[in-house]
Picture (cartoon, one colour):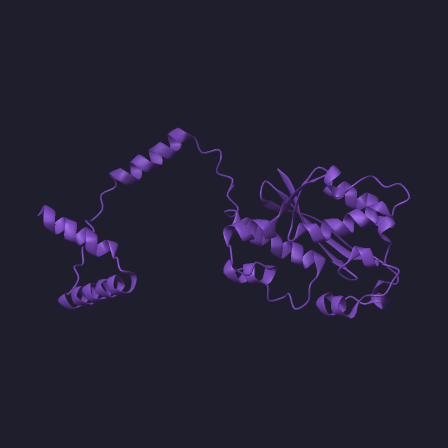
Length: 241
């Protein structure tokens, strides 16, 4: 399975106001592992950058003066993403800008969704964590992913961070190269571990003080909620005895 984790930076928020893409970054995942095959380019938007956008990514118009136009990089970019599943955080924003850039080419090849499939990690995060903040920084904190180098937004850096977040949200890098282990071998390992002699587990019983504190906690739960399942189970157990 080939996936590309993608991010863009732009001159502003609205394509309807003529804003353009100024940076594209993408990292490739093959079978849920980073392949090291990345795409990254800065682009000359041939227009000013809004102050709000500049505060977010720190990319100035002067820096972009000698960078290629989107038209110069379009073929290379489309070749990189073609046929992949694109993983994007808030995909509607990035796809809107990329579709707009494609539409401005002398020969428009179509829309992004004609060449790729889309997975929006913002939608995924909202399903997993409803009612919580689900921007990239919040997800990094939630999944203990280091984003300390992210003082400003950058398309390639954000793509690399998003790749880690996506893998964490969807179960990590599940393929660890162990597929060659046969079922018979797994059973043999299991039987071996069962047959090993081990000392019995040590059972530590609660003290009288711990039992008293436990009962007080259950009573507090019963008082506040009107129902404590643990107390109900203990009562039913006493009735059976």
